[in-house]
Image 1 (cartoon, rainbow, N blue to C red):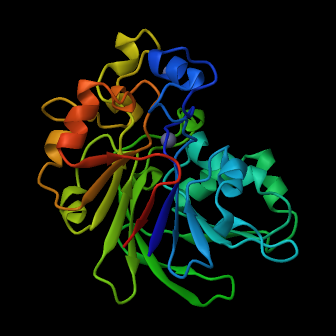
Image 2 (cartoon, rainbow, N blue to C red):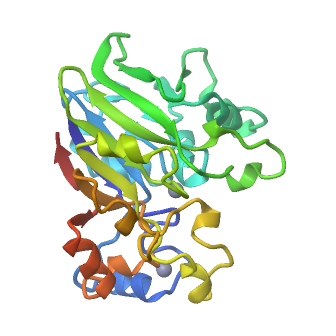
Length: 304
Ligand SMILES: [Zn+2]
Ligand SMILES: [Zn+2]
């Protein structure tokens, strides 16, 4: 399978429009090594012809423009055969509503995430102007879901969604009950191949995930924050990393230590603009690279 990081930043992107932290300032100034990144999204294909996009952020038009295999090949069509959602956070779903120009969309999501997206959401009507415009394929927890081509044939790829410790999207807190379906990690399998890619970019803990991470050949993991109190220490926010459903990288219980023994190729993505690993000269960057991790940039490709 071919995997392509369409966007490597956490919500807000890098630089973030309203942020003047050191990293964002340097990215705006074009400092070497501070590459701008769009919000988190990963594309995967078995044949290079049809693609599945994991998470649709607000920058999806720019992400498609930057990657010719996602360009239409005739008339009003798209090689994007499906969009997979890991949760209902706006930085993962807003792009769906910008793909409203009447090409049918297939969304793979748990019932909880899909319902929250379309119920009581007037804007969702723009994707339901004709019956086949929006198709939901349900992700059941822990069971394989085949990814289908537009013809209905199997693509040769399938995914397993596993519940990850998360939270409701901010806009649903207080109006919806939390469910294990609210936030998942995605394991991508290819027929006839032992190689598996894991995509877990929102997880407050490793509970229930660790054995399955050991099965993966390549892990794209939550690189949102280095420190638990990163936003608080910088005076930029009030929530801790775990309160925002992101396990920090650093510290004795962070992902760098906890995933030390995972043998897979390991890539941090969904990186918040405040994270010191974005600074090529920082000790945090050195620590991550010395531990064998890669730091995703937009356009990074992995073939498994
Ligand atoms: Zn996110
Ligand atoms: Zn910033």
